[in-house]
Image (cartoon, rainbow, N blue to C red; front, side, top):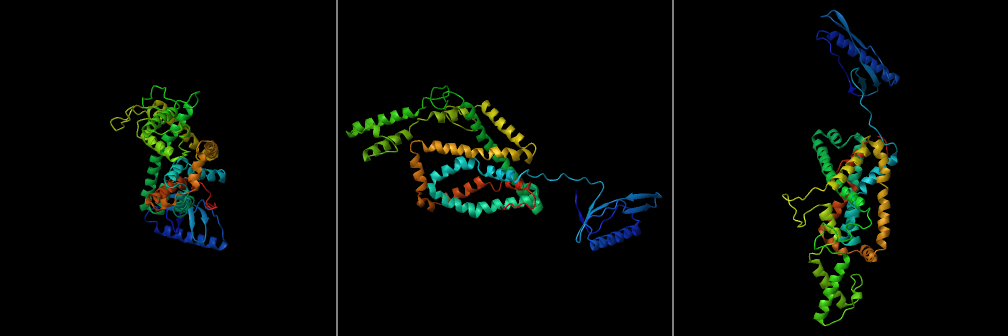
Length: 410
């Protein structure tokens, strides 16, 4: 129902019907006063006014319906006005909660956060990150939810209602989300590509015996032989003997072993040797040419298998939202909870890998000197916005499907 708050109204009659208009206003004023006294919430009058047209000597009937009368406002519905559809709501509040969780626990947390922790001093990175979340991320997160629930509109309409001059913010937010959708879906399509490729007895990125590999491709065993040969040469040069079984980057038991391993590792690092996993991604999935000279003039060939995976991702997104929150609210029960299952599996698998305790030790024994570096604080702030997602308009859209009186803070 289209609602308009009026203190007076008029109808389209001829200019010479001034007396009739005054009579109508007087009647409405009396009607409003009587209903205030009687506290009547609803009044219907199908024939409130009947005017006479002197030019055509015929009577015209003008009708309006008073649908709500209160002490401060009069709400009137004209007969020719159509009622807009009511804003749909979440079937359950858990649908809204899981949608928020699924939006927050995304690729930014799974692949970017561990890398930033490793780069910025391990557990020391948690200090600027938590401060950034509490002082910057959560207030903006809560603000977007409040605006979306109060105005019950998306980003564009919401900002226009706040101030017409701010409508551009809503458009900018939409454009940012539009661009972000492009590369996020491409990354997800890579994951789907790897999923299909993994249904083989021998994984294609585990060895170098493929048409796309180059002479630079080297497996782990090949790199170990390189280190052994390097250390043998250094042994002959230094006229010393080092037990090769002790050459392990995680168990450097002597100064000589450590020095030799470091020198040979540096030689390996600056060589052109690459792993089969790197070549599989760059040459088979990414389809770069074997020289890896990527430019605007040389973008490589289109990987139609990857295009098909990307199309599947877009179809999944479409069918997840084609009936609004009625369907997306059910899809999030899987998309929001399944990542935790995957993360648990990866954590258990990681704990049984060689050197896992070194990684845990690096995490729980932070390098606090990193906090003096301003780039660490910048990375923490950027990760906050990547993980919580304020400024993309998604939180505002999610909250707009809540009941107006929903306790969003809880």
